[in-house]
Every structure is written in C-alpha cells, then in structure tokens.
Length: 390
Length: 149
Ligand SMILES: NC(=O)c1ccc[n+]([C@@H]2O[C@H](COP(=O)([O-])OP(=O)(O)OC[C@H]3O[C@@H](n4cnc5c(N)ncnc54)[C@H](O)[C@@H]3O)[C@@H](O)[C@H]2O)c1
Ligand SMILES: [Zn+2]
Ligand SMILES: [Zn+2]
Image 1 (cartoon, rainbow over the protein chains, first blue to last red):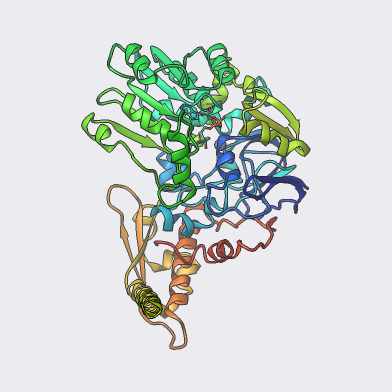
Image 2: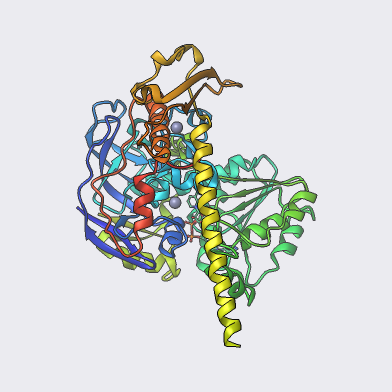
C-alpha cells in the first residue's frame, strides 16, 4: 500500500510499504478516509523524538472504515465508520480502568526504551517512533488497530468525516487540558498556542463554564481563527505584554488555569530564542525548549493549575521552580487519555456544541504529504491542519 | 614540551581506560544485583483469582526451576503482585540472558492475564537498515528483556 514515511530529519517520502495484517485476535484493519497532521509529528520530523527509523509510517489523527476484523472484536463490523484514538491502550489494566489510558501497561511493545528514559513506560501511539511501540501510522491506505473494541469508536450518522476526524487526537487532548486542569464555572483560563490543540482546549474551557478564555500565539491567521471559530479573546505575544495583559484581564490575580499547547519547539521573540535553540542543538544542555511553559507558570494565579499538553521528551533548562513552589501551583501533564472523552466528544459534535471541521484548512491527497507538512511546519498559506485523503 | 604532551596523552589514555574498566565493572555488578533481586509486576485482577502459581499463564511456569515466584494482593485495590527472581541459572547461561527471559516472561504474563493475548509488534516492518539504525534495532529486539522491570 501507499504510505507517508519519515526517512530522516526533515525528510519525508511517499512510499510503498507492506499492507497491515491482523496479528492479534482483538485487531481490526481500517481503510483510512482522513488522516491529519499534528504538532507532535513536527517534533519527529525535526528529530527531537528519539527512536525513529527510516521508513517509519507517521500520522496518528485519523478516521476510516472497518474492512477486516479479528475473531475477538465484538463492537465493530465491516463497513462501520470509526474514529480511532491516537493512543493504543488495552482498556483493562489498572491505569485504563482509572481513566489514565495513555499510561496503559499493555499498549507499548517496546517497554524497555521509555523505562530507561522515564522510569516507566507509557501506552503505545500510532506512528510515533519505536519508543512508543513502533506502530505504523495513519498516513497510509490501511492501518492495523490493536485492541479495536477499546480504541475505535463508531461515528454517529449526524457527524461528518471532517468533524469526527478531530475526535481522534486534538479534541480529546484539548478537553483533557481543561478537564484535568480543573476548569470550573467562573474561571479565567489562558491557553498558549492557537493550533488545533490550543483551539480545542479553549473551546473545552468555555464548555466547562470558564468566564473568560484568553489565547496566545503570534500568527494572526491563527489568532483570527481562534476568535472567529472558538470565541476566545486573543493576544499576540510579539505585540502584547502577555504577563501584564493576563493580570489586567483577571482582576490582577492571574488566570486560574493556564494550559500550554505549544510543546518542545516553542518560539520566543528576540535573541533569547537563538540561545535556547543553540542549547537544544547540543542535546546536553537541554533537549526541549520550554518558553510557553515558563510563561504559563509565571502568569498563573497563586494556588492555580498549569496543565502542560505540549509534548516534551527530555530535559529543559531554567525551569521556574521558585514560582511554582512559592505560588503553590499544581502542574499536571499527560499524553492524551482520549478513550475517556471520545464518546462524549462525538455526542457534543453531533449536537453542534463542538465544532472542529474548520481545523482542516488543507485537504490534500496522500501523494502531497511532504508538501502538506511543509505548509504545516512553516505555517504557510494559513495552514492549521493539512489532512490527507489516501 | 613534546615529552609533556606525550605524558599528558598517556595519562588521558590511562584515565580513559580506567573509566572504561570501571563502567564495565559497574555494569557487571548491576547485572549480578539484578540477577539476585525480585522483579515484580502488578496485574489488575483480585488476588482471589490468582491464588497460586497454578493460576498463572504459561510464560513464567515455562522457566521451571530457574525461578522462584511469590504472589500477594497489592495494597489499595491495585490488583495482585506477582514477584519472581532467578534462583538457579544453567552453568552455561549468561546471567544477562537469564534476566532477559525472566523480564519477558513477566511482561507476557501481565499481557495474558489482563488482555488474554500478548500484543504483537507491528509487522512486516516498513523500515530500512541505515548507518545509524543499529542501536534502535538492538533496543527493539530486546525491548521486553531489558528496562527497569
Ligand atoms: N498531550 C497530547 O496528547 C498531545 C496531543 C496532540 C498534540 N500535542 C502537542 O500539543 C502541541 C500543539 O500541537 P498542535 O497540533 O496544535 O501544533 P501547532 O504547531 O499547530 O500549534 C502550535 C502553536 O504554538 C504556537 N507557539 C509557539 N511558541 C509559542 C509561545 N511561546 N507562546 C504561544 N504560542 C506559541 C505556534 O505559533 C503554533 O501556532 C504540540 O507540542 C503537540 O506535540 C500533545
Ligand atoms: Zn497528535
Ligand atoms: Zn491498559
């Protein structure tokens, strides 16, 4: 079959790869209808995610149609339209039973790699390096879905493909940031990053009752989309004094909940950015750039919560531990626990409460994969999500 | 001057060799320590379901006399703890290999008890061997036998 493969740092190629097979009784195979780019892929493409190999099929936000089922799959039938969570989780270990799906014990077939890096191994992920199990990704004609009964969800008839697609990764990720960040009625919430993840976090905060949601980025087209499609207030960190604006807009207290949706390749204006990039290139002084996380910790009100959604892999430098400690903050983070939110999100999509279709700014053919990533990575042509139709 | 440089270079090499020998000794010590200690998994099943070794799936039992097993309830409703350690390694077996077998058997046990199957890695692979892929190839080949378990 045809697939989009990582072939080296900043190199992608459309290639022929072997068709997937049913390897476990709980597996199914789907024919991909839509498969989106995600900010996490950028960290792989730039070479920050370890254990990538030339020929790895990337992509993890996707939906499609069931074409083959293993003998133990009970919830799906051939022809079903499903959205698949990007996180491969068994649904039955202690972590899954406690709604911590991305910490699943049984989703990662290469547990040793991450145990050596992080002490314990997290769940598997589609198209996300051998450290996360080496599963082939979704920028392909077909994908093998392990634990199909637990990670694939039938799409209600009222929800179109383009809307349901984002229930796979960006919508549950954003929802998790607001939910586990503890957003409640009357809160002021700040969100760093106006990509799909930041937009979904802002929308979730509103639906959970936030009084004000303020989103931050530097790309005007993304700020415009955040304002127009989500209804959040926006700030441009290249023009506005973010710390001062956030204090002013929260009665001098600072936001109750700060959500970071940027990750390890964060940008910051000025010379400081080059200094941080240089340190990151050494892979010794730091592996990840934490500008947005630092800003979030500084902005957060005393006793508030910072939820880090952006992907980090290794070490960061100059972490404001003093602010965190002395302001009594709670810091939380996770790869998304999508399985706990997807059915609810599909319902909200069906009722029109949660809109996502606008995120697909660039529908493209899989053959145009490398071009799609160029648009997305370099934020060209007002790209928010390039979506491939294999 | 030249003599000094030579002497300095010699010291560096000697120093490097000492570091290498030391880290080899440390690695061997770690293997010996790991070969003696208990390796433990917690499975999400009540202890009443796993009363004795007879209730365990095949992978651990297949290690036979090589290991000792302990089963106990995990505190706080976290399921059942299954602990195992090497007690007799065949004379011709490298302790590292024996340890890898033990870790893999424990991981497969958890998979079987909790999900009924051992999850298969994706295959056939779409990857190519390159100049730099060897370390990842080795790491994935041994992925269940190594780690912190
Ligand atoms: N936790 C999870 O499970 C999960 C899931 C999906 C994505 N992610 C991560 O979320 C992050 C965002 O993903 P995305 O798909 O929206 O990516 P994206 O690239 O579309 O968006 C990131 C946005 O952050 C902005 N940004 C950069 N530096 C900033 C700064 N200092 N302050 C404010 N904004 C800044 C960029 O301009 C960009 O618009 C990535 O790190 C991605 O890996 C995590
Ligand atoms: Zn993602
Ligand atoms: Zn699990």
